[in-house]
Length: 289
Image 1 (cartoon, one colour):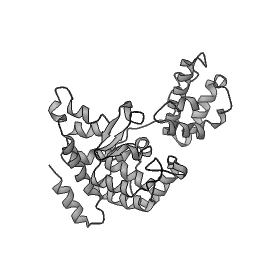
Image 2 (tube, rainbow, N blue to C red):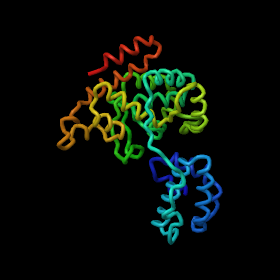
Image 3 (tube, rainbow, N blue to C red):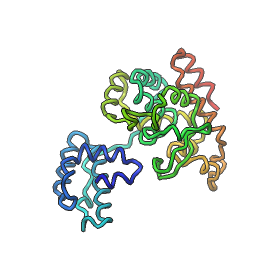
Image 4 (cartoon, rainbow, N blue to C red):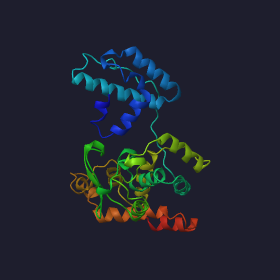
């Protein structure tokens, strides 16, 4: 199982799930794990965390498919197991006032988690991409996200607004990782940080880290950035694809790098939460294009 996780860009999250939920299988040959054991594990998890049970099924299925390909097993016991939990597509996006509240909570949460949440909001990137950010990836042009951590395996350049640069300036430059725990290791205990953040945010409609990517795209579009351009930034297609998209949407994609960075800088105005609420409204109004 560890061998499988080591080959993937989300290996940190995979390894965490393997260590947390599959620890009883660690010392067993994979060929001995039965379909009944898999279904029982998923049933138990679905009682308290149905969405995580679905993620766990996906991981288990991939592990056994990998083992089948490597000829470690003759057939997969996870084949055609139905998802144990029901899910509804999330549409949560934070309003400007909620961002203001959340940003204050990020400050109280502190480094590294508070800074990770901030970076997710101002870049639109996911937890795995940001948690693995290295100082060597940061340049004057932006954040050069390598393919092994990027969605769809495509490396690309993420533009960094002035607010994103401020977040980086506040991070200690110790070791290789921008956001680190002890001994230059990736941050852990995400669930504990999320619980702390919920308390700091107070009475607010529940939201999750991944909702910040949707919030980023929503506000970017409100600033006049074309829907396709905003979407491409979030799904990490990259600037080269923006400039060389094929018809019929070619014109919509022909936004220059400088123009996108200008819009991102305007989005960064959402971070001026030390200002009065009227100034926040003025910043949003002046950002309409």
